[in-house]
Length: 200
Image (tube, rainbow, N blue to C red; front, side):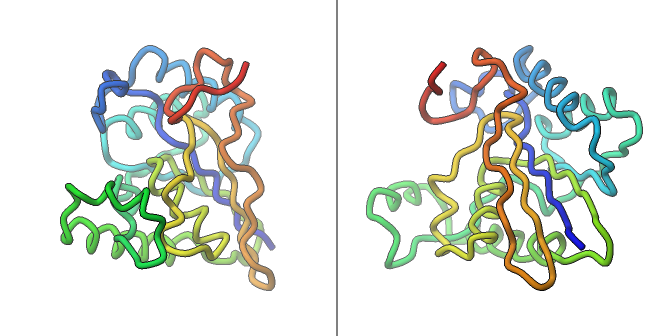
């Protein structure tokens, strides 16, 4: 049996291009949320969870409007966080990122992601489908966990606003990344949130 995690980054929020980390969805973000809802319409979700912050909460609300069978629940395990600190094998190009990050933030992020993995990276007795609406760093950490990559490798794993990533978890085999940063439901003008523009 397979446990599927459908990971969706929240929609674009207002002033996201100016570095604001959270806020109400922009008009583009609302369209993104509706389109990913339509994309997921045929999935028989057993659970839907979202970060309690404003952008993912509002994204979850839009999905619930389009998918009346789901009942999104907030989970503090899906908060935006810093999942790990600098390590000796980390490429030097990433180390500058930690200049303004406190040790307390790293410790809290590590604990949160440890609990999140324990909660969702579990095999199921029958096929299970869970939707998690969260943040780029959290999705990067889950992908890193699936690959059992070094801790720092969540960095550089970027997903667009409302992009779809799917991870399959089974008891007898390693976790499998089925899809990563799938943007098929978004027209080019709605593909926001990546560090570089996507080709047309």
